[in-house]
Length: 416
View 1: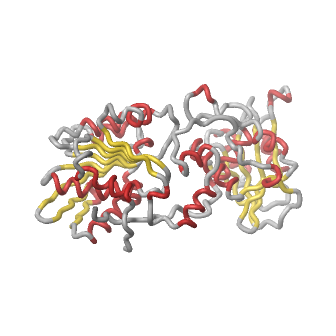
View 2: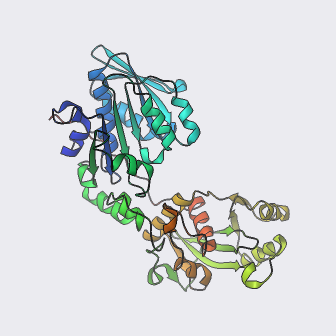
View 3: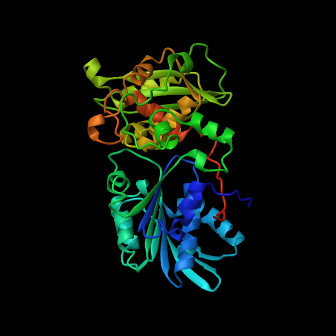
């Protein structure tokens, strides 16, 4: 593995505990842009600190899930440590790794903090330190339980996260109160990662749009407000001439009194085109339609097209059953993570991966009306003008692949 020197910000994040003016802090918090080198510097610094200051103690490495923690933190971390002369012995079945150097050895347990029940996993332990990767994605109960385990004298807390909503509990309780918590707060930008080439930095600036650009690229804790998809442009994302497509998929958001929205998508030259749509509002029409009537509309929408699958809201049990009873279409329950889906649709629009026929008037109308619910105090869309938006989100989350996965860059702990 080829290593690059750390930037000054990374050196501080990794070695703050060695510097006189910072060593009395109880914690360090690194927030900011994606791909800014936070995780690499902090994880390496965490193990170096633990090895230098303790022997025979237990520590915790925490991520959203243990799988993500191994992929994003432990695998590159152990590769760097081994190059620096550390010995790493992982017990995969028991979720820990023993790390040793120069006669000192400590155990690092791996924990996933994905929901409220995760707090029980770490309860009862005695730790000399904890590293929380993507702390803002973890429930407060898990984070606070992990911190409560650090009762050994000299223990320290290491937090790493990308920004979220300014109403997020971690922002209010730790970012805003860093001085009160005796925590060193470091804000990172992409420029702080020397291993990130300028052209890759520019690519990331193109990948994100809207509130996600502000958070992931600019590293700001900003509130979601206004239109959810301000990057949607009629002069860019609408088309009239239908391309020669080689694959066809239907996405569906089902409603009884709420509207039912279906879109027919065609794939051509690496891009997806919404060719036609069906949109029925029972309230507007004055009476609902049965599942069989919606199925007849699906047959009409897809007439003459070889459909690969129908992606549908997984909660639409009765309509899914109706489609399967007829035996013509393969049904795939949609991935239904709302915020992740909105981010993926934003990315797809910004990257010009999805386009819409000018006759898809209801979908186009909703793009101009779909807004964040500012009264909700978080990243919550308004539950109106969202049915075509939901079926678009189901399609993108379930069928559309990202243009590229995020590359991983590593850097070494440079001598001060």
